[in-house]
Image (cartoon, rainbow, N blue to C red; front, side):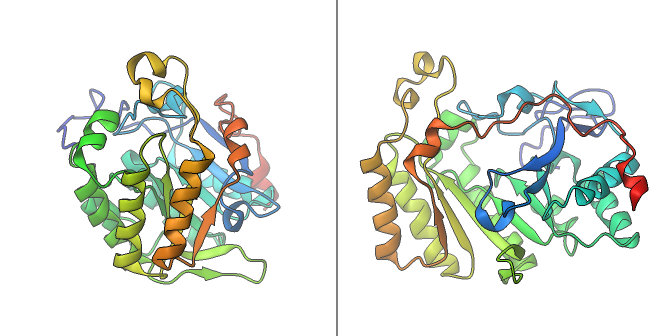
Length: 299
């Protein structure tokens, strides 16, 4: 299921991802803090899955990444959630960190489509993905939204416990682009197909970020979109373990990175105002929208 290859029998124990084989969701609600082509005015139908194979030391979603949060649901309930979010006029269904539930997600998408569901499905992930698992989503996902965090093994090992992250993520993004090779948008400017690769600048790591942008541009030119993010916010206590990550990104650092992107020739990109680091993009993981509410019956 993932590059960790932990060989856990998740029917009886948890994997590195922190979850069993039981499908869990920590939140299902409209989300307004994604890229403009995803959130639009109505918001993205964000489904947050607990658990993660990476466990980055600076994780903004650490409340759910250990797998302990959320409620167990059936595949049928997940399908109902898709329709309930559609009833709220969500632009799309945004599946966030669902790597370890790909078989259930694939089953839910197929059945939802059979029942007439017509919103785009977005797979929002860390980039640390198994090619075999991604192939299970071929033809089902409209938009891939992966990270590409590192180009060097050293920071990948230090901050995400995954020295092999760069090689794994590059191959995974290749597979995503193979499945969704063309970025498409509707008349309202909302994305309906393609790949957007996110990269968040870490404080003091402009060189790593430049390498990421250079790789993405040389590999895919302007066939993908790149989201260059300045929103890094230190989590509580991180300065004690990783002093270099104990501050926000400086404007001068971010300007150097975005200027570099322009010099490379990057045209399809999203950038952020520095003020966003002062805002909270982290919702309450209080199981909102997870329990049955009957909205699907309105369809």
